[in-house]
Amino acid sequence: MPMQPKGFIGFPDAKMKPVKIPDFFFTDLLPQIDDLAELKLTLHCFWLLNEQESQLKYLRGVDLRNDEVLLRSLNLDSDLRTPQQALVDALERAAARGTLLKLEIETGDEEKAIDDWYFINTVKGRQTLALARQGKLEELRSVLPDEARLKVERPNIFTLYEQNIGLLTPLIADQLRDMEKSYPPDWIDEAFTIAVAGNKRALRYIQAILKRWETEGKDERSHETRGRDSEADLRRKYIPDEYSDVIIG
Image (cartoon, rainbow, N blue to C red; front, side, top):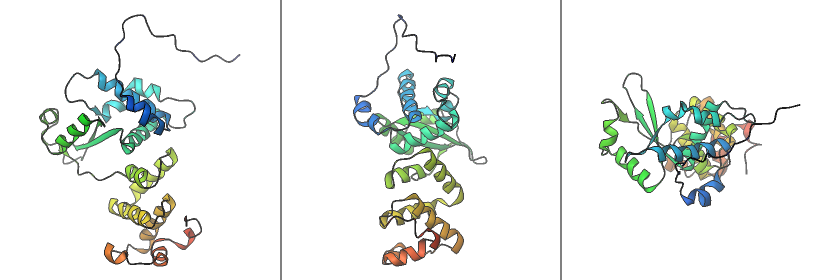
């Protein structure tokens, strides 16, 4: 006879510490979240931030990746991802959605190590992030090594996808990671721009542009000249023939 899953035994009688969650989480954010790992991460971040007593409230990626309670909650039998992979995807989703504001910091010149920090997207969080980027946050400087500096930021590939194409899925996230490893950031930015300008909001269209540039060389003409190309010209320049029958019209 199969064992029944262990149920929750109930909250203890001892006084418990409340966790504050904005009501907008339930009315505006929760309906948008379609990934269980992202939902668990978001709730876990609210709990961790509630536990902090300092004025500067933030979460470090290295701490989240070593958080046994969080990783245990992401260990789902129905999920093909490991808890660590689920956490990476959840962080990317939460940052792309705008729930978490990500700050990347280079912590050394030689190894180019990146320390990722996260702030909740509230007025206070946005103000803190803005001050940090301007180098005006004394509390931040006090906890960073002298050689640390903010990494020059551009929209990450997951943000580009969610803002211009649609919602992320684990499969799409894997494809985006492969693109990021295979092509220069400027190429990816421009391929997204071309897809949006042509109202061809499909990942395969963007992949086809990048593949053609890789195999035939990238046209370095100005955006102004390219903007005068006809739709047929754009297809001929950017889309390999083998992709022509799968591109959304």
